[in-house]
Amino acid sequence: MKKNRIKFLMIEFLLLMLAVFFVWKIFDQNVAETRIAVILPESGDKRWDALINGMKQSAAENNVHMIICNTEEIDGPEVEREFIREQKDNDIDGFIIYPAPGHETENMLKKECGNKPYLLIADSLAVKEGETASPTIQPDHREIGRRLGEQLKKKEQKIGIIADWKMSEAVQAEISGLTEALEGSGSEISWCIYRRKEQNITERMKEETKADALVILDPGVLEEFGEQAEHGKYKGAELYGVGYSLKTVALLDKGNIQGLVVPDGYEIGYKSVKEIAGKTEHKFYKMKGYTTEYQIFSKKDFSMDDDLERFLYSYE
Image (tube, rainbow, N blue to C red; front, side):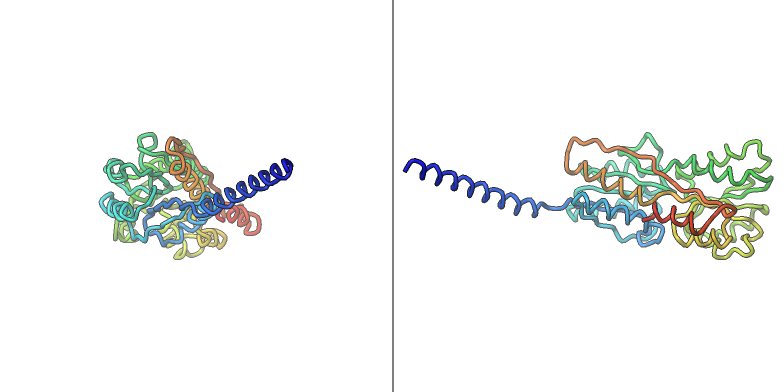
């Protein structure tokens, strides 16, 4: 009789454990996803494809629901502020933000994000490294400029630069790296144009002296000029620059672009979601910034078979 009672209690205990296990599984499967708002300028632009692919992969692994804001060009902190306020009303848990140009951006982010964690990502735009309220994930912009300069210094030539926003610390770093690489080479930078909203870059270039090579640090302008290049030159100048898309690589292969640096957007996207997920899951987690990889291509040495595979590996 005593043995039967012990057996009965053991069965009861096992059934209780099974019940607890299944209840835990039910609640575990219904844990709410972390909601992260992503604010990018011109969010539908093709240059974000690799970045967003990286974000999606990381989001799937970290139980994150991404909300990619539908935006046009964000030309200053006032515009970015409105998107932040809209998403705060949407009950999000954190932000991944491509910072708007302007000195007031950092103060605006601190004020508007409040107790919501935010992480900065950057490539052609950035706020000053070391002074941000949150870590930044981006490539080494100075090194990108230096590698472009190494391609250009092989022969003496006059160089024109078409850059993104003048207030961008990233663009300034790229130009500094380019200048360092050209020292003592005989090549020199003749002029630099900083892009402005609704500005006709081609008309603006007519005000400058003729250049033998153009270094284009604005991905959209690089694609535009690359498409219009003839016989390997645009308005008599070879094209070099920073790009992100398959179209840019195809233009390099065709010979319309002579030199190209491609930051690894996939890595930027993947690590940004991983870091913000760590912060939202654990309040005392300290987010880290990262310097990400990039690919360097030269038309002279480019192989569509070998180099395209390297590009796609990071791109997807």
